[in-house]
Image (tube, rainbow, N blue to C red; front, top):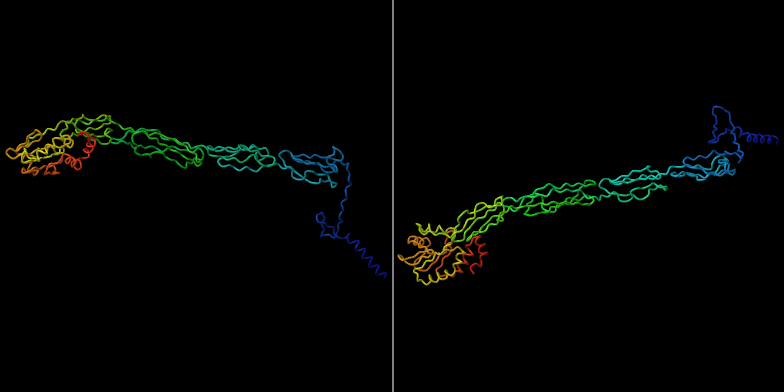
Length: 465
Protein backbone atom coordinates (compact mmCIF):
# COMPACT_ATOMS: atom_id res chain seq x y z
CA UNK A 1 0.00 0.00 0.00
CA UNK A 2 2.81 2.36 0.87
CA UNK A 3 4.57 1.41 -2.37
CA UNK A 4 1.49 2.32 -4.46
CA UNK A 5 1.24 5.74 -2.80
CA UNK A 6 4.88 6.36 -3.47
CA UNK A 7 4.47 5.53 -7.22
CA UNK A 8 1.35 7.67 -7.51
CA UNK A 9 3.12 10.64 -5.87
CA UNK A 10 6.10 10.34 -8.20
CA UNK A 11 3.81 10.43 -11.28
CA UNK A 12 2.07 13.50 -10.00
CA UNK A 13 5.38 15.29 -9.48
CA UNK A 14 6.46 14.34 -13.02
CA UNK A 15 3.30 15.76 -14.52
CA UNK A 16 3.75 18.93 -12.46
CA UNK A 17 7.32 19.41 -13.57
CA UNK A 18 6.78 18.50 -17.27
CA UNK A 19 5.71 22.01 -18.39
CA UNK A 20 8.75 23.45 -16.73
CA UNK A 21 11.21 21.33 -18.63
CA UNK A 22 9.43 21.31 -22.07
CA UNK A 23 10.88 23.76 -24.65
CA UNK A 24 8.84 26.91 -24.88
CA UNK A 25 7.85 27.54 -28.64
CA UNK A 26 4.84 29.30 -29.78
CA UNK A 27 4.38 30.00 -33.48
CA UNK A 28 5.06 33.66 -33.98
CA UNK A 29 6.28 34.20 -30.42
CA UNK A 30 9.91 34.81 -31.31
CA UNK A 31 11.18 32.00 -29.24
CA UNK A 32 12.74 28.86 -30.74
CA UNK A 33 14.37 25.75 -29.24
CA UNK A 34 18.15 25.77 -29.24
CA UNK A 35 19.13 22.41 -30.67
CA UNK A 36 22.82 22.77 -29.82
CA UNK A 37 22.21 23.16 -26.10
CA UNK A 38 19.99 21.38 -23.69
CA UNK A 39 18.86 24.58 -22.05
CA UNK A 40 15.16 25.44 -21.94
CA UNK A 41 13.87 28.97 -21.73
CA UNK A 42 10.58 29.74 -20.16
CA UNK A 43 8.24 32.18 -22.02
CA UNK A 44 7.62 35.41 -20.25
CA UNK A 45 3.91 36.08 -20.18
CA UNK A 46 3.29 39.78 -21.06
CA UNK A 47 1.80 41.75 -18.33
CA UNK A 48 -1.59 43.32 -18.92
CA UNK A 49 -1.16 47.11 -18.98
CA UNK A 50 -2.84 49.06 -16.32
CA UNK A 51 -5.61 51.17 -17.90
CA UNK A 52 -5.17 54.85 -17.23
CA UNK A 53 -7.53 57.36 -18.87
CA UNK A 54 -5.45 60.21 -17.59
CA UNK A 55 -2.42 59.49 -19.80
CA UNK A 56 -2.65 62.12 -22.61
CA UNK A 57 -0.91 60.00 -25.28
CA UNK A 58 -2.18 56.51 -24.72
CA UNK A 59 -2.21 55.84 -28.52
CA UNK A 60 0.12 57.41 -31.05
CA UNK A 61 -1.01 60.76 -32.47
CA UNK A 62 -3.11 60.38 -35.65
CA UNK A 63 -1.69 62.12 -38.71
CA UNK A 64 -3.50 61.42 -42.03
CA UNK A 65 -1.82 62.84 -45.16
CA UNK A 66 -4.05 64.94 -47.42
CA UNK A 67 -6.78 64.63 -44.85
CA UNK A 68 -7.90 65.54 -41.34
CA UNK A 69 -8.73 63.68 -38.09
CA UNK A 70 -11.36 65.27 -35.83
CA UNK A 71 -11.06 63.70 -32.37
CA UNK A 72 -13.32 63.67 -29.29
CA UNK A 73 -11.74 62.55 -25.91
CA UNK A 74 -13.51 61.70 -22.63
CA UNK A 75 -10.91 63.91 -20.95
CA UNK A 76 -11.74 66.99 -22.98
CA UNK A 77 -10.61 68.83 -26.02
CA UNK A 78 -6.91 68.90 -25.16
CA UNK A 79 -6.68 65.11 -25.26
CA UNK A 80 -6.46 63.77 -28.85
CA UNK A 81 -4.99 60.33 -28.30
CA UNK A 82 -5.91 59.37 -24.77
CA UNK A 83 -7.61 56.08 -23.97
CA UNK A 84 -11.15 56.00 -25.35
CA UNK A 85 -10.63 58.92 -27.76
CA UNK A 86 -12.78 58.62 -30.95
CA UNK A 87 -11.59 60.31 -34.18
CA UNK A 88 -13.58 61.01 -37.32
CA UNK A 89 -11.39 60.79 -40.45
CA UNK A 90 -11.90 62.86 -43.63
CA UNK A 91 -9.88 63.76 -46.74
CA UNK A 92 -9.13 67.02 -48.48
CA UNK A 93 -11.02 67.90 -51.67
CA UNK A 94 -9.74 65.82 -54.51
CA UNK A 95 -8.99 62.83 -52.30
CA UNK A 96 -11.06 59.82 -51.35
CA UNK A 97 -10.92 58.09 -47.95
CA UNK A 98 -9.86 54.44 -48.07
CA UNK A 99 -10.49 52.55 -44.80
CA UNK A 100 -12.38 53.34 -41.58
CA UNK A 101 -14.13 56.66 -41.31
CA UNK A 102 -14.12 56.46 -37.47
CA UNK A 103 -11.44 54.95 -35.17
CA UNK A 104 -11.05 54.68 -31.38
CA UNK A 105 -8.02 54.49 -29.10
CA UNK A 106 -8.12 50.97 -27.58
CA UNK A 107 -6.68 49.65 -24.29
CA UNK A 108 -4.02 47.88 -26.42
CA UNK A 109 -2.65 51.37 -27.13
CA UNK A 110 -3.66 50.96 -30.77
CA UNK A 111 -6.38 52.57 -32.88
CA UNK A 112 -9.29 50.41 -33.83
CA UNK A 113 -8.61 50.70 -37.59
CA UNK A 114 -6.52 52.35 -40.31
CA UNK A 115 -7.31 54.59 -43.27
CA UNK A 116 -5.56 56.76 -45.88
CA UNK A 117 -6.47 59.41 -48.51
CA UNK A 118 -6.03 58.51 -52.16
CA UNK A 119 -6.04 61.15 -54.84
CA UNK A 120 -9.23 61.06 -56.92
CA UNK A 121 -8.85 60.41 -60.72
CA UNK A 122 -11.10 60.08 -63.75
CA UNK A 123 -10.45 57.53 -66.48
CA UNK A 124 -8.33 58.65 -69.40
CA UNK A 125 -10.49 60.16 -72.16
CA UNK A 126 -10.36 58.34 -75.53
CA UNK A 127 -9.14 60.25 -78.56
CA UNK A 128 -11.73 61.34 -81.10
CA UNK A 129 -11.48 60.77 -84.83
CA UNK A 130 -10.06 63.75 -86.75
CA UNK A 131 -9.58 65.68 -83.49
CA UNK A 132 -7.76 65.93 -80.18
CA UNK A 133 -8.03 67.47 -76.69
CA UNK A 134 -5.81 69.21 -74.13
CA UNK A 135 -6.32 69.01 -70.35
CA UNK A 136 -5.38 71.50 -67.62
CA UNK A 137 -4.44 68.85 -65.03
CA UNK A 138 -4.48 65.46 -66.65
CA UNK A 139 -7.15 63.15 -65.18
CA UNK A 140 -7.27 64.75 -61.72
CA UNK A 141 -10.26 66.41 -60.10
CA UNK A 142 -11.39 69.69 -61.66
CA UNK A 143 -9.13 69.11 -64.68
CA UNK A 144 -10.77 70.57 -67.78
CA UNK A 145 -10.21 69.00 -71.17
CA UNK A 146 -10.87 71.17 -74.24
CA UNK A 147 -11.59 69.46 -77.58
CA UNK A 148 -10.57 70.70 -81.03
CA UNK A 149 -10.89 69.28 -84.55
CA UNK A 150 -8.49 69.02 -87.43
CA UNK A 151 -8.65 71.53 -90.26
CA UNK A 152 -11.79 71.09 -92.34
CA UNK A 153 -13.83 69.55 -89.49
CA UNK A 154 -16.31 71.10 -87.08
CA UNK A 155 -16.91 70.01 -83.50
CA UNK A 156 -20.38 68.78 -82.59
CA UNK A 157 -21.16 68.20 -78.91
CA UNK A 158 -19.48 69.41 -75.68
CA UNK A 159 -16.40 71.48 -76.32
CA UNK A 160 -15.08 70.91 -72.76
CA UNK A 161 -15.38 68.18 -70.13
CA UNK A 162 -14.45 68.42 -66.41
CA UNK A 163 -13.33 65.64 -64.07
CA UNK A 164 -15.94 65.53 -61.27
CA UNK A 165 -15.80 64.28 -57.67
CA UNK A 166 -17.57 61.03 -58.54
CA UNK A 167 -14.70 60.11 -60.87
CA UNK A 168 -16.69 60.75 -64.01
CA UNK A 169 -16.31 63.35 -66.73
CA UNK A 170 -19.00 65.92 -67.25
CA UNK A 171 -20.93 66.03 -70.50
CA UNK A 172 -20.52 63.57 -73.36
CA UNK A 173 -17.92 62.71 -75.95
CA UNK A 174 -18.09 65.08 -78.96
CA UNK A 175 -17.42 64.18 -82.59
CA UNK A 176 -15.60 65.96 -85.41
CA UNK A 177 -17.79 66.26 -88.49
CA UNK A 178 -16.69 67.21 -91.99
CA UNK A 179 -19.23 69.85 -93.08
CA UNK A 180 -16.93 72.00 -95.20
CA UNK A 181 -17.43 71.53 -98.96
CA UNK A 182 -14.40 70.87 -101.16
CA UNK A 183 -12.56 73.72 -102.79
CA UNK A 184 -12.91 73.68 -106.58
CA UNK A 185 -11.54 76.05 -109.23
CA UNK A 186 -12.69 75.77 -112.83
CA UNK A 187 -10.70 76.79 -115.91
CA UNK A 188 -11.22 80.30 -117.25
CA UNK A 189 -13.97 81.00 -119.76
CA UNK A 190 -12.78 80.97 -123.34
CA UNK A 191 -13.74 82.04 -126.87
CA UNK A 192 -12.89 80.27 -130.11
CA UNK A 193 -13.53 80.89 -133.78
CA UNK A 194 -15.06 78.16 -135.92
CA UNK A 195 -12.75 76.52 -138.41
CA UNK A 196 -13.04 77.29 -142.16
CA UNK A 197 -16.14 75.82 -143.79
CA UNK A 198 -17.38 74.66 -140.38
CA UNK A 199 -19.95 75.94 -137.94
CA UNK A 200 -18.24 74.31 -134.94
CA UNK A 201 -14.97 74.60 -133.07
CA UNK A 202 -13.08 71.96 -131.09
CA UNK A 203 -12.36 73.27 -127.60
CA UNK A 204 -9.97 71.78 -125.02
CA UNK A 205 -9.39 72.63 -121.36
CA UNK A 206 -7.66 71.22 -118.29
CA UNK A 207 -9.78 69.57 -115.58
CA UNK A 208 -10.68 71.74 -112.56
CA UNK A 209 -8.42 71.93 -109.50
CA UNK A 210 -10.20 70.23 -106.58
CA UNK A 211 -9.05 69.98 -102.94
CA UNK A 212 -10.86 68.74 -99.86
CA UNK A 213 -10.30 70.83 -96.73
CA UNK A 214 -10.71 67.80 -94.42
CA UNK A 215 -8.93 64.56 -95.36
CA UNK A 216 -8.07 65.60 -98.91
CA UNK A 217 -10.13 62.82 -100.51
CA UNK A 218 -12.45 63.59 -103.43
CA UNK A 219 -14.79 60.67 -104.09
CA UNK A 220 -16.51 61.91 -107.25
CA UNK A 221 -16.20 64.64 -109.89
CA UNK A 222 -19.07 65.09 -112.33
CA UNK A 223 -19.25 67.10 -115.54
CA UNK A 224 -22.41 68.73 -116.84
CA UNK A 225 -21.80 69.56 -120.47
CA UNK A 226 -19.62 68.30 -123.34
CA UNK A 227 -16.25 66.70 -122.66
CA UNK A 228 -12.98 68.54 -123.36
CA UNK A 229 -12.07 68.20 -127.03
CA UNK A 230 -15.70 68.21 -128.18
CA UNK A 231 -16.98 70.16 -131.16
CA UNK A 232 -19.05 73.11 -129.95
CA UNK A 233 -21.60 74.82 -132.24
CA UNK A 234 -21.93 78.56 -132.51
CA UNK A 235 -23.08 80.29 -129.31
CA UNK A 236 -22.40 80.22 -125.56
CA UNK A 237 -22.15 76.95 -123.66
CA UNK A 238 -22.05 76.63 -119.85
CA UNK A 239 -19.72 73.91 -118.52
CA UNK A 240 -20.32 72.93 -114.87
CA UNK A 241 -18.25 70.67 -112.61
CA UNK A 242 -19.37 69.30 -109.21
CA UNK A 243 -17.03 67.65 -106.67
CA UNK A 244 -18.02 65.43 -103.71
CA UNK A 245 -15.98 64.46 -100.64
CA UNK A 246 -16.35 61.45 -98.35
CA UNK A 247 -18.96 63.21 -96.21
CA UNK A 248 -21.04 63.90 -99.38
CA UNK A 249 -20.34 67.62 -99.17
CA UNK A 250 -20.26 69.12 -102.62
CA UNK A 251 -18.98 72.19 -104.39
CA UNK A 252 -19.54 73.39 -107.95
CA UNK A 253 -17.93 75.74 -110.41
CA UNK A 254 -18.69 76.74 -113.97
CA UNK A 255 -17.18 78.49 -116.96
CA UNK A 256 -18.38 79.49 -120.42
CA UNK A 257 -17.23 78.31 -123.84
CA UNK A 258 -18.17 80.76 -126.56
CA UNK A 259 -17.86 79.82 -130.22
CA UNK A 260 -18.03 82.47 -132.92
CA UNK A 261 -18.52 81.95 -136.65
CA UNK A 262 -17.04 84.51 -139.02
CA UNK A 263 -19.85 85.38 -141.42
CA UNK A 264 -19.95 87.33 -144.64
CA UNK A 265 -22.95 89.36 -145.84
CA UNK A 266 -25.68 87.20 -147.32
CA UNK A 267 -25.31 86.89 -151.10
CA UNK A 268 -28.28 87.51 -153.33
CA UNK A 269 -28.86 85.24 -156.33
CA UNK A 270 -28.43 86.87 -159.74
CA UNK A 271 -31.43 87.95 -161.75
CA UNK A 272 -32.54 84.93 -163.84
CA UNK A 273 -30.26 82.69 -161.79
CA UNK A 274 -29.64 81.06 -158.41
CA UNK A 275 -26.90 80.15 -155.93
CA UNK A 276 -25.61 76.87 -154.54
CA UNK A 277 -23.38 77.23 -151.46
CA UNK A 278 -21.38 74.92 -149.22
CA UNK A 279 -21.71 74.84 -145.44
CA UNK A 280 -24.08 77.54 -144.15
CA UNK A 281 -23.64 79.70 -147.22
CA UNK A 282 -22.26 82.74 -145.40
CA UNK A 283 -19.62 81.41 -142.98
CA UNK A 284 -15.85 81.67 -143.27
CA UNK A 285 -14.65 79.25 -145.98
CA UNK A 286 -18.06 78.74 -147.60
CA UNK A 287 -18.10 78.73 -151.41
CA UNK A 288 -21.10 79.91 -153.42
CA UNK A 289 -21.56 78.87 -157.06
CA UNK A 290 -23.55 81.12 -159.42
CA UNK A 291 -25.97 79.46 -161.84
CA UNK A 292 -28.19 80.92 -164.52
CA UNK A 293 -31.64 79.75 -165.49
CA UNK A 294 -32.18 77.93 -168.75
CA UNK A 295 -31.83 80.29 -171.66
CA UNK A 296 -29.39 82.52 -169.76
CA UNK A 297 -25.62 82.54 -169.58
CA UNK A 298 -23.35 83.63 -166.77
CA UNK A 299 -20.99 86.55 -167.31
CA UNK A 300 -18.30 86.93 -164.66
CA UNK A 301 -16.83 84.70 -161.97
CA UNK A 302 -18.46 81.33 -161.39
CA UNK A 303 -17.96 81.22 -157.61
CA UNK A 304 -17.08 83.37 -154.60
CA UNK A 305 -15.52 82.43 -151.22
CA UNK A 306 -16.25 83.92 -147.79
CA UNK A 307 -12.88 85.08 -146.43
CA UNK A 308 -11.64 85.47 -142.84
CA UNK A 309 -12.06 89.24 -143.23
CA UNK A 310 -15.83 88.58 -143.45
CA UNK A 311 -15.87 89.74 -147.09
CA UNK A 312 -16.58 87.77 -150.28
CA UNK A 313 -13.88 87.25 -152.87
CA UNK A 314 -14.40 88.59 -156.40
CA UNK A 315 -17.45 90.36 -157.78
CA UNK A 316 -20.96 89.04 -158.45
CA UNK A 317 -21.61 87.80 -162.00
CA UNK A 318 -24.78 88.43 -164.03
CA UNK A 319 -27.06 86.20 -166.08
CA UNK A 320 -27.72 87.41 -169.62
CA UNK A 321 -29.98 85.86 -172.30
CA UNK A 322 -28.34 82.90 -174.01
CA UNK A 323 -27.08 83.67 -177.51
CA UNK A 324 -27.77 80.87 -179.99
CA UNK A 325 -25.31 80.69 -182.88
CA UNK A 326 -26.91 78.96 -185.82
CA UNK A 327 -24.02 79.73 -188.14
CA UNK A 328 -22.18 76.57 -187.26
CA UNK A 329 -20.77 73.90 -189.54
CA UNK A 330 -22.54 70.90 -188.03
CA UNK A 331 -25.47 69.78 -185.94
CA UNK A 332 -22.99 68.73 -183.23
CA UNK A 333 -21.74 72.32 -183.00
CA UNK A 334 -25.32 73.48 -182.60
CA UNK A 335 -26.20 70.94 -179.91
CA UNK A 336 -23.02 71.64 -177.92
CA UNK A 337 -24.37 75.11 -177.14
CA UNK A 338 -27.18 73.51 -175.13
CA UNK A 339 -25.05 70.92 -173.31
CA UNK A 340 -25.79 70.98 -169.54
CA UNK A 341 -27.81 74.17 -170.05
CA UNK A 342 -31.06 73.37 -171.84
CA UNK A 343 -33.30 70.43 -172.71
CA UNK A 344 -34.42 70.13 -176.31
CA UNK A 345 -37.84 69.20 -177.68
CA UNK A 346 -37.40 68.56 -181.44
CA UNK A 347 -40.66 68.49 -183.40
CA UNK A 348 -40.77 67.03 -186.91
CA UNK A 349 -43.76 67.27 -189.27
CA UNK A 350 -44.28 66.52 -193.01
CA UNK A 351 -45.73 69.99 -193.65
CA UNK A 352 -47.00 73.08 -191.76
CA UNK A 353 -50.60 72.04 -192.29
CA UNK A 354 -50.19 68.76 -190.49
CA UNK A 355 -53.02 68.41 -187.99
CA UNK A 356 -50.85 66.90 -185.24
CA UNK A 357 -48.20 69.56 -185.75
CA UNK A 358 -50.66 72.42 -185.50
CA UNK A 359 -52.27 70.95 -182.42
CA UNK A 360 -48.92 70.42 -180.66
CA UNK A 361 -47.60 73.89 -181.45
CA UNK A 362 -50.82 75.48 -180.21
CA UNK A 363 -50.60 73.73 -176.84
CA UNK A 364 -46.91 74.53 -176.39
CA UNK A 365 -47.37 78.23 -177.19
CA UNK A 366 -49.73 78.47 -174.21
CA UNK A 367 -47.15 76.91 -171.86
CA UNK A 368 -44.02 78.95 -172.49
CA UNK A 369 -43.62 79.74 -168.75
CA UNK A 370 -43.57 76.04 -167.80
CA UNK A 371 -41.11 75.29 -170.61
CA UNK A 372 -38.74 78.01 -169.43
CA UNK A 373 -38.95 76.82 -165.82
CA UNK A 374 -37.85 73.38 -167.00
CA UNK A 375 -35.21 74.78 -169.35
CA UNK A 376 -36.81 73.40 -172.55
CA UNK A 377 -35.94 74.85 -175.98
CA UNK A 378 -38.11 73.88 -179.00
CA UNK A 379 -36.54 73.08 -182.38
CA UNK A 380 -38.95 72.77 -185.30
CA UNK A 381 -38.22 70.73 -188.46
CA UNK A 382 -41.17 71.14 -190.87
CA UNK A 383 -41.76 70.35 -194.53
CA UNK A 384 -39.98 68.64 -197.40
CA UNK A 385 -36.83 69.72 -199.24
CA UNK A 386 -36.23 72.10 -200.82
CA UNK A 387 -38.95 74.05 -198.94
CA UNK A 388 -38.10 72.42 -195.62
CA UNK A 389 -37.81 74.86 -192.66
CA UNK A 390 -35.81 74.48 -189.49
CA UNK A 391 -35.87 77.09 -186.74
CA UNK A 392 -35.13 77.81 -183.07
CA UNK A 393 -37.44 80.66 -182.16
CA UNK A 394 -36.58 83.29 -184.72
CA UNK A 395 -33.29 81.69 -185.77
CA UNK A 396 -33.34 79.81 -189.06
CA UNK A 397 -31.29 76.63 -189.56
CA UNK A 398 -29.46 75.69 -192.69
CA UNK A 399 -30.46 72.68 -194.81
CA UNK A 400 -27.28 70.82 -193.82
CA UNK A 401 -27.98 71.30 -190.08
CA UNK A 402 -31.60 70.14 -190.62
CA UNK A 403 -30.47 66.98 -192.36
CA UNK A 404 -27.87 66.15 -189.72
CA UNK A 405 -30.37 66.69 -186.92
CA UNK A 406 -32.81 64.28 -188.60
CA UNK A 407 -30.11 61.67 -189.00
CA UNK A 408 -28.73 62.05 -185.43
CA UNK A 409 -32.14 61.81 -183.81
CA UNK A 410 -33.76 59.45 -186.35
CA UNK A 411 -36.58 61.84 -187.18
CA UNK A 412 -38.63 61.02 -190.31
CA UNK A 413 -40.30 63.52 -192.65
CA UNK A 414 -43.12 61.09 -193.37
CA UNK A 415 -45.26 61.71 -190.29
CA UNK A 416 -45.46 63.70 -187.07
CA UNK A 417 -42.90 62.70 -184.43
CA UNK A 418 -41.09 64.33 -181.47
CA UNK A 419 -38.06 63.55 -179.31
CA UNK A 420 -37.19 64.93 -175.83
CA UNK A 421 -33.42 65.29 -175.22
CA UNK A 422 -31.97 65.94 -171.76
CA UNK A 423 -29.17 68.38 -170.86
CA UNK A 424 -26.54 65.70 -171.48
CA UNK A 425 -27.75 65.22 -175.10
CA UNK A 426 -29.43 61.86 -174.44
CA UNK A 427 -32.68 60.84 -176.11
CA UNK A 428 -35.11 60.38 -173.18
CA UNK A 429 -38.62 60.12 -174.68
CA UNK A 430 -40.31 59.91 -178.13
CA UNK A 431 -43.85 60.84 -179.11
CA UNK A 432 -45.79 59.81 -182.24
CA UNK A 433 -48.86 61.87 -181.38
CA UNK A 434 -49.41 65.27 -179.75
CA UNK A 435 -49.12 65.32 -175.95
CA UNK A 436 -50.22 67.94 -173.48
CA UNK A 437 -47.60 70.16 -171.86
CA UNK A 438 -48.62 68.71 -168.49
CA UNK A 439 -47.55 65.25 -169.62
CA UNK A 440 -44.18 66.60 -170.74
CA UNK A 441 -43.74 68.54 -167.49
CA UNK A 442 -44.64 65.52 -165.35
CA UNK A 443 -42.08 63.38 -167.12
CA UNK A 444 -39.37 66.02 -166.71
CA UNK A 445 -40.22 66.64 -163.06
CA UNK A 446 -40.23 62.94 -162.22
CA UNK A 447 -37.12 61.80 -164.09
CA UNK A 448 -34.94 64.60 -165.42
CA UNK A 449 -34.61 67.30 -162.76
CA UNK A 450 -31.36 67.64 -160.79
CA UNK A 451 -31.37 68.24 -157.01
CA UNK A 452 -30.83 71.96 -157.52
CA UNK A 453 -33.70 72.10 -159.99
CA UNK A 454 -35.96 70.22 -157.57
CA UNK A 455 -35.29 72.84 -154.90
CA UNK A 456 -36.02 75.61 -157.37
CA UNK A 457 -39.19 73.90 -158.51
CA UNK A 458 -40.47 73.81 -154.91
CA UNK A 459 -39.74 77.50 -154.53
CA UNK A 460 -41.28 78.42 -157.91
CA UNK A 461 -44.23 76.02 -157.82
CA UNK A 462 -46.86 78.70 -158.39
CA UNK A 463 -44.85 81.13 -160.49
CA UNK A 464 -46.66 80.23 -163.71
CA UNK A 465 -50.21 80.25 -162.24
